[in-house]
Amino acid sequence: MAVVQVHPRAMSVVPDSAVGSSSQHLTETVGSSTAISDRLAEKLALLRRTVAGYGPSLVAFSGGVDSALVLKVAADELCDATVAFTAVSETMAEREIEAAAAVARELGVRYEAVRSNELARPGFAQNPSDRCYHCKSELFDLAEPTRKRLGLRYILLGTNLDDLGDHRPGLVAARERGAKQPLVEAGLSKTEVRELARHLGLTVWNKPQLACLSSRFPYGTALTEERLRMVDRFEQALYDLGFQQLRVRFHELPSLPGDPTAQRPAMARVELLASALPDAIRLSSQIVEAGKQAGFLYVTVDLEGFRSGSANLVLKRLPILGAPPIAAAQPTVRPRKVVVAALVIRESDGHVLLSLRGPKQSMPGLWELPGGKIEPGESPEQALIREVREELDVAITVDGIYDVVSFGYPTFELLMLVYRCQLLGVPRAKEVAEVRFIPRHELLSRPVLPADIPLLTKLAASASG
Image 1 (cartoon, one colour):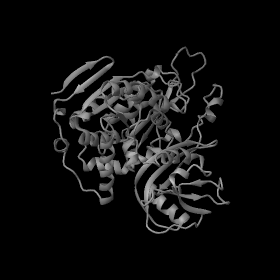
Image 2 (image 1 turned 180 degrees about the vertical axis):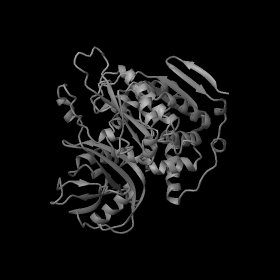
Image 3 (image 1 turned 90 degrees about the vertical axis):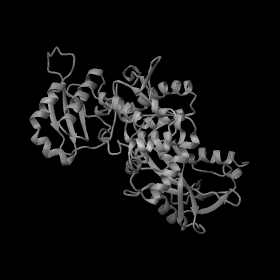
């Protein structure tokens, strides 16, 4: 039976099983494991080492599979020095609040839930394209006092590699606050996260993808508590009808002339898995009734089916009839490029491998860590092996994530995944002007790419070490 402790502005659930818990106990509590590949086992080992190296930590826990995996590994490696933290707000589906607490109880981890009021935060309720930045900022504003009160060192997030390629303003807030992203550091994709969660016996390993309720609204559509509850009620009704992976997208409709109703009518666009569309036709009357009971005027089913992040496909909102155009929303989001880079440090002297961009490349004459873009269908590791082979005519082994660098160029945002690598031969300049090992104290004495400066600065500062 759980012991409940109430703190100011917080609800804290501390299961009795958290006392004296161990890795063996946690595994047996959740279930038996499944086999994984040697490569994935190496990533799991890296994840364990990474989390253990953080020390006492607060895990930002939504109840989904990503943060559940982080929480499980943290509980295994840090034992009682791990606390799960959930910010409970209007944008969290009611069914997920208890679900998150249940997973924490399964893992025998102390659980703290703090009431959040995102709608009162300036800039959030207007639903701008950087809404997630305000959401994550609210999370850290609440989590940081809890971290300090409990004497913990870091806040851990459940971000995975696949998240880095989408429009995620919340990641900017995470980097600003110094939050750790262990799944990224271990190089884990969403598929690999699910596979590891199943391997470790987590009951949520196949849980449908989660996203806060605000993601159901087109950018620029105002968020209110009543609108959020409309979406929540309709989605819960669809779950009750047997549908699993789904989204109810909220679309505001124009008011009729002379209509005294303050609340504008809305249409629900339901996204279901393609395989569930025949069931949607069969249950169409129940679906429509559930939508109208939730408060929607019209109910439609999207024939394209479920798409996570579909609101990000079009960041220019179509104008509402009779409403003025939203000119300010257009320049708020810049394209993001995700690239990979190899950090090769020569063991004999600690020198760092850099390549010089050639005259036919963009930003010629600048030194950089070797690497490049990720082609469709490639994993980051595969892309890095290919890029280094093409540029330096040498094979490499990719050991794991060393750092994640975010840099804003004038026309785009760059996200660079830096991996520790080992050479399997002697590099030579093939598609670059030059390649050489540079002493750390000389890294900043030559012109380098702007995005590489922060990392090279850290490497140069560690020259004495």
